[in-house]
Length: 188
Image (cartoon, rainbow, N blue to C red):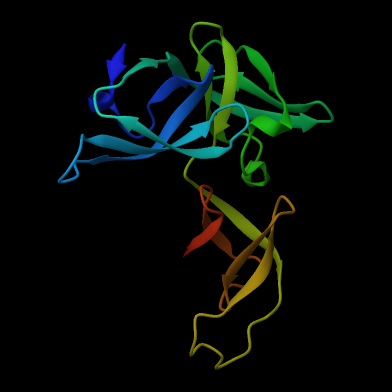
């Protein structure tokens, strides 16, 4: 058992008979009345984010989760297949457990979040940044750089992302997988 003073981002707790991770929290001490903690909790099974307020000092149950290193192998009709980097054990993960799966390339290293008590897979975390090649983008017009205008570009695994006008077909770009945004152009 832990209390609200132990809250930190990424902590997994049992709440309403389900597992939630703390996305954001804020301790509030109003001038009048008792202190409380505002939180944003993300359901690990459905991915839904909810807001909840805990009274200061409320006891919560911390769930034991492990982050295990896996390598992405391939995808078929059933879902995605990964191999543990130390034991070489292979696992199958359905499509619904992977957020932003269009940024996965064969051989990429990921972290699989597993509930340690029941050995069930909760979700798959991609690395924060990936480097991919642009396979198609409209050419930017010369001199059209006065504003931060974006255009669509298709990346090597078929997904699309918004990029600045100066990015061309064949360029390698760095993408933030958490919010699906262009970060920078990578030198070859």
